[in-house]
Length: 184
Image: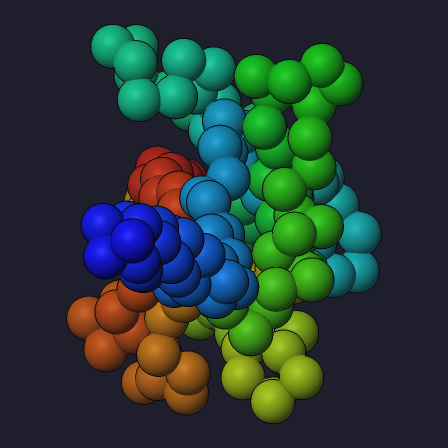
């Protein structure tokens, strides 16, 4: 009889330990990085003129091939351009519009525009719910004729507010591309 009691007690303890586990906690939501294969920056001159398209397309992602970078024309000197950015994942059919996710999660994203040469300024035209810049829409103003570069970088989970620099923003880079430009 003593053996039956000991076995019953051991069975009860074994069932109790296996029934009470920590698995009941809600798992933390994982927000995986999106695949961005194509960034298209559209620059429309205020007052008319030719629209300029800057595009970086990297269909193999982190593969061995470098992105195909194109600029459709030259910028006009001393001109303001309304800019917009569209991001796509073209590894899917049809292509997934990643721009929509950036808009929905605007508090977790920010574009940074770093320019050299004949670009006078880039200013943000859109903000998140807290009034911090996002950069899907912006104004680019050119200076006198000459050469220029514009690096476009999307950061995920940057510090907001920040001082407008990549160094202060932190976060992770989702996509970055430098475009070589001519201002005439």
